[in-house]
Amino acid sequence: MLNKEQLQTLAAGEAGQMFGLQRERELHVRLSQAGVLGEIAWQLRLAAKEKWDRGYCLRRTELEQQLKRDDCGLNWGWDEVWQRFDEKSARRASEPTTVLVIDLPVGQVVLNDDLHTGRRPPEYDGQVGGHELTDLRIAAFVELVLQHRTPEEVCYAIACLINANDDLRDVAEGSTPGMFDELIDAEIAAGDKAEPPPGGER
Image 1 (cartoon, helix red, strand yellow):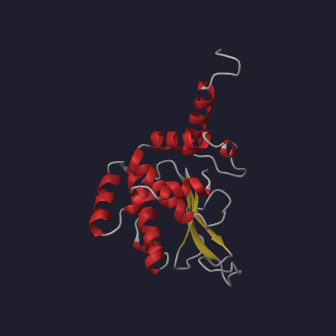
Image 2: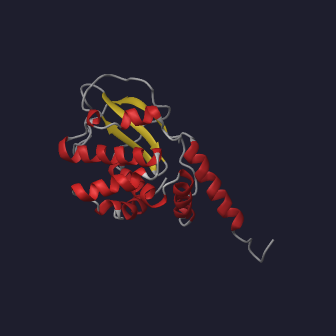
Image 3: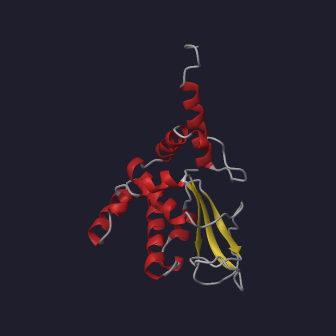
């Protein structure tokens, strides 16, 4: 999981500057070169855009359908939270909010649905955290997929960022393991083995 500063740096990258009809078409074409991972990134980008335009409306995107077709090893599912999103005060809601939760390699994103339908399958396997960094994490993920394309390359890039910050090396307690977590752990372990021990080479 990346910290806020690292997320902000990634979010300010090339993908973060690609707005307007023509640039967004170019972004979609380039993300499509990453296959399924690129389509997930594109649908996440559309979900974030919907939030700014009209508030989250997942029915206007194909994010859930894409995840059901092929989730590329990501852990995801639906859950309910007793909290109002996108308000200055996090007061308790009078009824639960249905949320789509996705564990991206950069961290968990929580997207609230605008239509209360109750919890539905698949049920999210894990603990739902806060939604405050969702927009940053989506933007950072889109940038990583745009620049690196494959899950292995994305995870290698994240592992490099984690290895550069000792505070991020411990896995967050309660995180749900998945394909991306295993890839990142493997890259971090490989980086540790590549470092010569103190006092000379092995």
